[in-house]
Length: 286
Image (cartoon, rainbow, N blue to C red; front, side, top):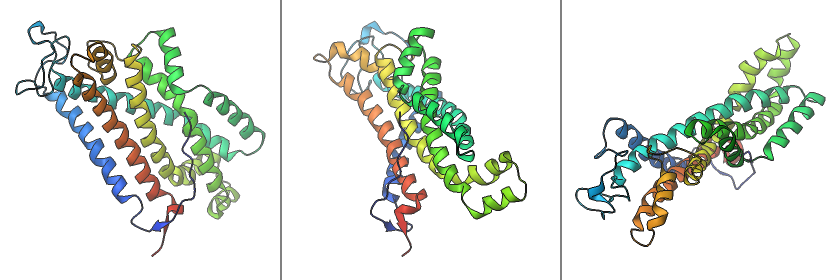
């Protein structure tokens, strides 16, 4: 899991950077969020039940997206699966931010041996991708949604640490920070008052992209049987269940695949749009 690299690109007029991309991402994320919220209160059928009299039915008026090999309504499972994807993304990104951001700020505020020591440890952590760490955690502690969320959060934390350190080092060279240090303000005050607010834009961008990665990773883990256990609906688990019926009812793979693509694309577009808004290199005054 690597941090986002901020590179200089062709400059765009101020106020227009990433507008279409940002809105496209918000629309796609809105669809996923709507599905998750609706499924809390209502689904056409029980997505966790088994109905032997309606196995592998094609899309129709009663079952909009058909039914799976257990007779479950695919549309209901898609709706309920959005809950799992958003839950995993939220918790994983939250854990990553809580662990990585303070680590990176401390490193950036203390250049020298401490910074070098901390970042070498961070580099070692980056050698273990979040998905690989989740697989290892699943083998040790048992597969499950909680295990996946914690592992993905820990595996993503080094990326947040890199972003936080980079931003902190830029802020520490500013005159108002130098003035605060000269006036005797301690590191905690400077970090909370000056550093964190000024790097929040970069952290939000990292969070949005990491959210999409977490959604994709959870789907991969569930597909491998190391994520959300049955009968709880999960888009990755739906892919696993459908693979044995690829030539009988191929649409069973299409629907969860589209759901995963919409969620991941939405968060990636949101990250691109936010980066264009927050990164001053992307804009110039008209």
